[in-house]
Image (cartoon, rainbow over all chains, first blue to last red; front, side, top):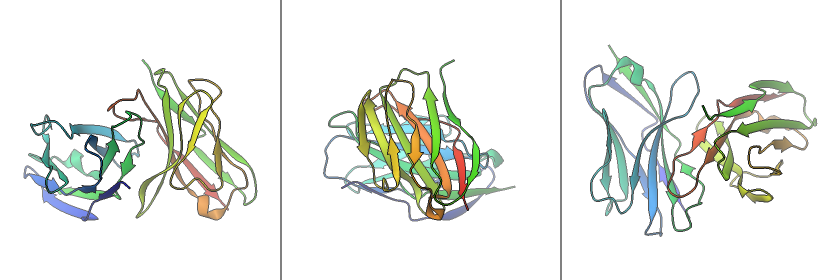
Length: 116
Length: 112
């Protein structure tokens, strides 16, 4: 069974500093995808970044990067140069890709607060 | 632009009433999903569909049903609403493969 663990219910970071949000996962499948979503206070779910299990390089999207350590089964999100607008809930999610259609399973989320 | 819309965005109902939350997407995606979001639980999967006439139960399907009569719509029905079903409900769709989920704006349901 799939499982996503986000051990940090809440985090604080100073504006312009980098922050790492932790995510570990558990799967017996060899082919899977890892996702991060952002949910600001307005409530919408915003896709941030994707990492495939066979991707050799860590995914990056602007100020977001995914620190993928396959052997440790971790997929931490790194946000560089934090901005006040980064304050939000962040969810890690995983889908097993063997059939291409497995539903996404989400972690419980981490609430990030950026301090001026 | 293609989009996914949910209605109503807010609803208050009474225990025991039947409630239907609508979800409509114009992405032409085969895959559609319903999640509920509760504090401390993240997003939990209720039901999902991989195409017309296909429906599958998720982690928290008890008390909910869905039907898929066309590609665009996946309505979620609460047969007899309970206070434990007070939550924010998200509909999402995806094109399959390793593609991301596209989420609706959410529907906040309160059961009194």
